[in-house]
Amino acid sequence: MSDTISPPAQASPPVPSCTPTLPGFTCGLDATLRVVAGKWKPLILYFLAQGGPTRYGDLRRAVRDVSDKMLIQQLKELEADGLVKRTDYKEVPPRVDYSLTSLGHSLAQALVPLCSWGTEHMAEVSRVFAERDAWNTKRR
Amino acid sequence: MSDTISPPAQASPPVPSCTPTLPGFTCGLDATLRVVAGKWKPLILYFLAQGGPTRYGDLRRAVRDVSDKMLIQQLKELEADGLVKRTDYKEVPPRVDYSLTSLGHSLAQALVPLCSWGTEHMAEVSRVFAERDAWNTKRR
DNA sequence: TTGGGCACTTACCAAAAGGTGCATACTTGT
DNA sequence: ACAAGTATGCACCTTTTGGTAAGTGCCCAA
Image (cartoon, rainbow over all chains, first blue to last red; front, side):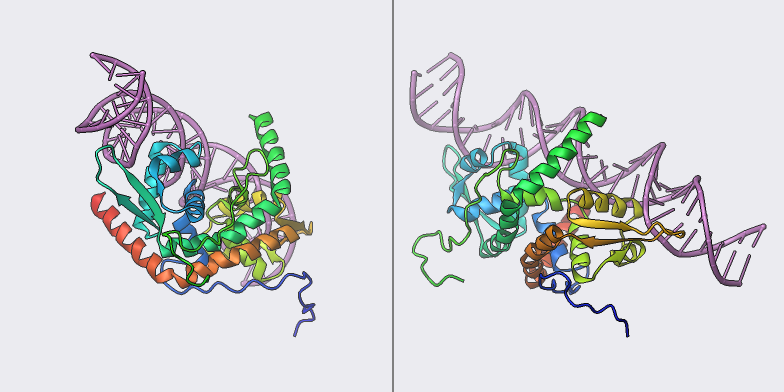
């Protein structure tokens, strides 16, 4: 047919196709993204993946810049999505801790390459963002 | 997975720590997320990773449900971030196509595990979302 | 001559996401 | 007595995000 079959002009292996399996999701990637969408979710997940069960206050201090409202909200969603487990010790000064479920753990694993990518290419990303921000602030 | 070396509650510690390397980013994961944030970006990236250079109209039709405004906007950002390359053929009926840069390709690779995760756990995710949506629509 | 496709651009709006700050009920430390 | 810490809840508000609809300039087909 067409002569345009100059194979992988790019050395990298082809990305496997993302087949739509269930209604409501265009593909697996889509499904994943809905679950990790949220400013702090991946960071929470990743943080929990590194340590064991973590108390709310510790989490709060670890994920700096997060507000109570946001942290609680995202934790609740993660819990509802079956990614984290909340343990309430019903004690007098409240004591609660959060840990990953096995599902949460598996997701955290899947995040590793993203994290690596970011680490490897952080310089480029940083530069690009600096430019964009500079341009934005100049314009505004 | 790691074999059963799980004496403590902390089972598998294969998640490497995400070290803050540059100012402005808490970690590599953070950096990555800023670049792929956006409702359509991962899908665009993933789609471009599967085929070669793609014309705007084709992309538009492929990523169904995306509006012109959104597609253009996200493409522009991806281009500004050095992930996609835009080629304008300056022809009479406009002809433009988009392809991934090597940086874009590497990011697409990093997305593969996320895609797989979603595919593998789509049933769980789907169920959880159905519940949540049902609950929301009842409440509203 | 009208209509459609191409690759956008713009103006306007609704919804969602996220932030601030106060309140709770109880305890411990000063 | 009072402040501070604990883990949240809630009301209010701003910012960000995404969607709709229209328009642009050009060409080709009917």
